[in-house]
Amino acid sequence: MHPKDLSIHDFIYDLPDERIARYPLPERDASKLLIWKNGQISQDIYKNVAAHIPSRSLLVFNDTRVVEARLLFRKPTGGVIEIFCLEPSSIYPDITTAMATCSCVEWKCLVGGASKWKPGQVLEKMITHEGITVKLEARCSGKESENFIITFNWEPATLSFASLLHIAGAIPLPPYLKREAESSDLERYQTIYAKEEGSVAAPTAGLHFTENVMRSFENKSIARTMVTLHVGAGTFKPVKAEKMEDHDMHAEWIDVNRNALQRLRDQLPGNIIPVGTTSLRTIESLYWMGVKLISGEKENAFTLLQWEPYTLSEKNIAPADAIDALLQYLNEHKTERIIARTQIIIAPGYRFRMASALITNFHQPASTLLLLVAAITGMAWRDIYAYAMENDFRFLSYGDGSLLWIRE
Image 1 (tube, rainbow, N blue to C red):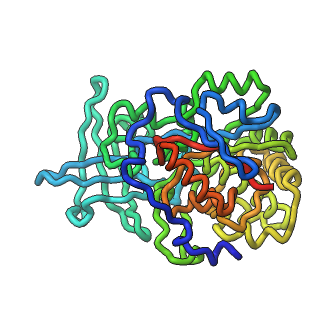
Image 2: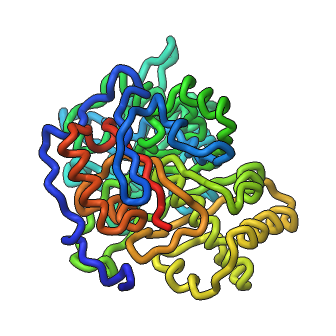
Image 3: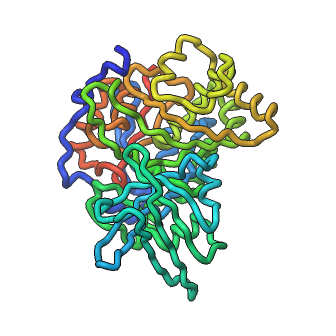
């Protein structure tokens, strides 16, 4: 069956509200870890994850950093307008450039209370930070599909937009947590290796990793590398279409440097284990972008549409050749990074080219993330989730996780 023909109703399970973890455990690596391999289930905790990974494997982490993308403006009448910054408008080549911009930016946003925002009205927000008064203005410049285009201006003009959000915004916790962000979330809703600012949601599988866990990898000769996928709000977008062919998968930015590509190339055909669905989507997208380069599709090689992998699969190109094509592209263009957009949807019927296993949390019913898990495990995802439910695993962003080995 082609993934287009899948019914989302086949990927629903009962998730009681009390099983959703509202807060993280006091210790990151104390979270439970379910291991699924060759159809067998066992469990441990993240502190011991290295014991379940062969030496000389390569772990792939997503080093994106969650930005304080939620801005609240109070109108003179007292009403509140909430602006949720999703991603920069198309006038910017990538998120990093837009985040570093000073004085003025244009952003795609969701707006709460938009009906109360009169056309032409400028919203203002004054913040005092470390003795400096920051003035922020927001103007609605138009609309694009479900999103508003908002132009932000601020003073002092020397502040970058990333710095401005840090001063004026709030961490946008997932809606299913049903609570406001607290001071503790500033640390705990970031991975310890978060670096590249641009996500509006955390790559949550990485929240369990500590410096001690990282050292345990080194002690076992398990290598690691970093990629960047900036997680968009679309990761929480429910699948409303009955058939997957009618679901519009969200697109996200990826940014991968030469060193990471070379690490991936050197590892093939050994074990490559992404930490989180975002890392998995990144390395699988890189494969298909290499395939497109080899196939002569150079003009649109770095934009991957959701169903393209299923069309390109007939080309049957080796993973090493695909990554070689990307490295050759870097050499020819005298650049050090691949910056691209991926809309890849990984669902049952997908054949993995890069990944050997996946470390991930437990995901919402009827979500594209659950489809991705099912692509790894087949219908055994039901047994895995039933085991987690019966053994008091905690679910979703601040919950427990799993190590899932891709079926041979």
